Length: 59
Image 1 (cartoon, one colour):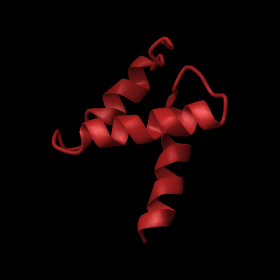
Image 2 (spheres, rainbow, N blue to C red):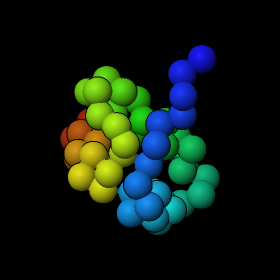
Image 3 (cartoon, rainbow, N blue to C red):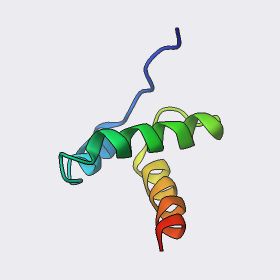
């Protein structure tokens, strides 16, 4: 089993701005993005990159 992905405090704080009912989905998508790109820990920059990618997919 793999270790949980680490998040910086700033990225965690940004995640908490997302409505609670979609937060688990958002966390999984951001963590998957980070894993696919070999990025760790998840920083505010990685959070924003993932957000931009997913916003493109939903717009």
